Structures are given as C-alpha cells and as structure tokens.
Image (cartoon, rainbow, N blue to C red; front, top):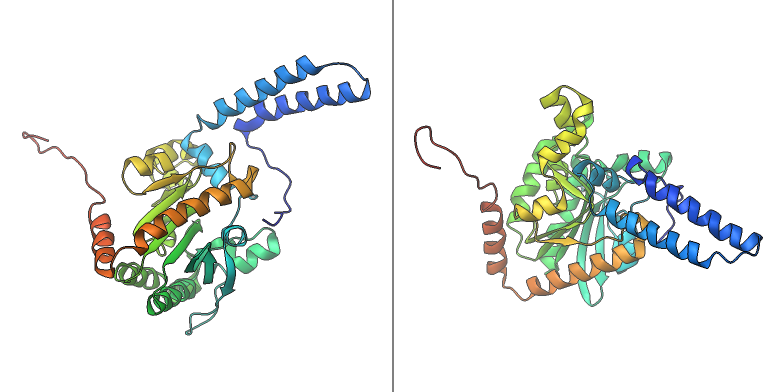
Length: 330
C-alpha cells in the first residue's frame, strides 16, 4: 500500500498514549546510549502503553470515531484496490458531461472473483484534493458509477462499492446538472440490478452522497467508519445552533459501526488495527478483503431473482420504530 506522505497526526484523546510512547522511547535511548540495563523498566512501560491503547481505543465516543474516519492517513479506495485487487482497469466518464475524478471505478479481480468496483476517492495533498474534489462527487460521478454498474450487469459480474465521502458536491454547477436526480436515479436503478452488490463504508459515509452507491445486498462498515444522514457539524448547527454541540450530535445520530449493526442497517463490522486503519493499512486491507470475499461468494450462489428479493426486503425492513398513541398502547 502506497505511503500517504503525511506526518502522523494525533488527536486530543490520543495524547496520553503519545506521552507514554515518548517516555518509552527515552528509556530505550537511555539504555542504548548509556549502556544501562533497563530491561524491566522498558517491559513495564511497554505493558503500560499497550494497556492505555486498549483502554483509549475500545472506549471511543462517536465523535472520536468520526475523527478517525477522517484521518488524512486513512486508506482510501485506490489504496485498498492496490492492496486487495489485481488486474484493475479503470474506466472513465459518464458519456454525457465529463469524467468525475472524485468517483473511480473499473474492472478488477479479488482473488478468483472478477468484479466491477466503484468508489469515492479523496486526495492526499492540496493538488490531489482539488482534482478529487475532496471526495465529493458531482452528478457526472454518480452517472459514471451507474454506467459501470450497468456494464457489470451486462457481463454478469458482481459489484463492489467503496463508500468514503463527506457527501455529494453541493455547488451551483452540481445543482445545475441535477445532483439530486442523479443520486435518486442510482437509488432506483441499483435496486433493480440482477447481480450481487456488496458495499463497504471505509471512511466517511455522508448523506445521499454515500447512499448514491450504497444500495446493496450486503452493506459492510469498517470499525472506525461512520454512516449518517448528515455530518455531526451540520446536525449541531441545525438542532443546537452551536458547533460546540458537535460531539453531542454525533452521539444522537447513532452513526458508528456498532450503532448501525444494532439497528440492522449494516451486515458486518470489519475490524481495524488498534488505533485505526491508518496505523496498519495492510492489516486493514486484509480484513476488508476477507469480508468482501465471504459475502461475494455467498451472493454469487444466489439466483438473480433471489438477489432482487433479498435486496428489496433488506431496505423495506429499515426504519422500523415504536410509537405511543395518546391514551393508548405502544
């Protein structure tokens, strides 16, 4: 997996770990430079570092997981493609307007399974982020995605989508070219595709921009990714009128992998290395590949009719809730 080129960024909740790691490094340096036997102290400090990591990373708040999902060193779609797929042939353009570089896709092979992969792609530096539009696709991006998925159906190939976007691009040009219609058409047309579809939320899953490639038989999510109708910042601005309420909004939105699995909106949580996928991209890619292959092989064994029925029933079952009738029963 290619280097991201970023210095390791730490968040406030990681500072206790960083401080302990610095002390551990000092002990090791002292032992080397001064030729002092500090084996016991180093072993004790290593144990403390690991215990602190376990405590911090297994008790993350929803907002802290959102921060990890946005980490600039986190693997993106093309990083995972390079790690888990072979024979990737990228296809371009929506055949109507242009080629949206925020949405990538093409033919690939995962082990022995030939697939069409579509995913959102962010940039690593300013130049690439401008080219990729920070992972926010225009209408032509969603139309390109649908063109590739229809091609997959014609060739009888399963579809894999990688979701990683703050949301679809909300600019004037996107509105002029009908961004809402492009996403709505994808929701409708993906539901009717007669081939297996597996979607994986690998980072940010923001609003309709994520859902535009998220209508699948199986939806998977990385452990520190999130999937939400709105960003925590947007929710805080609307409901609390205060950006300081962002952590509270993140909790209320139930956007973490654990929340989504409990609500039956996703089928599986893909484990990440301790501290996030950016800590060990190769290990994260291995876990993602294993999960994709498991679900793809199960779905490939199903008939087109069974795939359509399963996908329809999956989404029809979403959004169930309890309510109280005034003066009546729940």
